[in-house]
Image: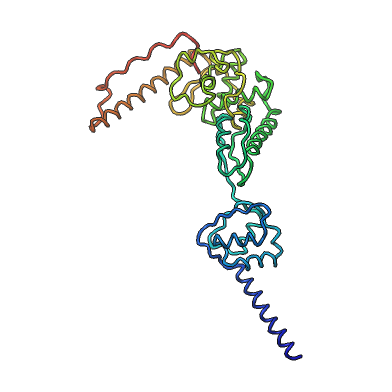
Length: 359
């Protein structure tokens, strides 16, 4: 009987030591000296997860990790996903990451002003997405933003998420739109917003740009937007050169130098700022704008003021050309660039054709 009690005591001591060892090992730094990426498919058993982690060097003992999971009733709570396990992470820290499902977040940024075809191609070729993207979404139907997702999300699902995001944003802003706008449908708002989006890269300018186009529509004046010419020629892809006079005058369904109203559809996917600007444009009487040479634009309400702004911009262009010439002279000779008076005279610009000035 005494031997039996001694055996119980010994077993108890051994059990206590094992428990203490497992508890201590559970919280000790792991063996991996660098971040470990592990992908756990759906339905993976706890033992297989433990084996996977040991194979990758994230844990030192598959049985100890599995025992830790089961003793803590965590074996059935591990979530499938792609995980980034920190260097030297303990088994306890790893288990917490897997149970809480802290999967790696991949991202895809659909920039404002991209066409649906451009965004579709980004989604179709993203390596962390799965499945076919399906047909190219309707132009202007997607909301440009940065979208986060976990590995394995479907391509078609992400595009649908972009579509629903635009629908929600537009619906939320539509009821608060300004009165007296020259359009009555959400689709028309998106069409105009896509033009505003392509006309300026400065968010603070968009309400003013929108006011110019709204004012033009109210007086039945052509929008005369260069990006609409490009869309009619290339579906939004860069021309790689300047717009030709024949293209300005060429009739396409999207060329707002030819058509007297909005084009039949958007020319890009407008962002939140452009949509908001069109629904609540700045109050102004301006009908024209032209680049100011500094990345923005100057605005005018009359043709005479606009003509002066155009002349000022041409002077800026001329000065920029002279700087390029001076730089080329320096690069060619290795000497100090010649003063302006010594440079060859530039040809005078030809008079503009007698037509309404382009904005």
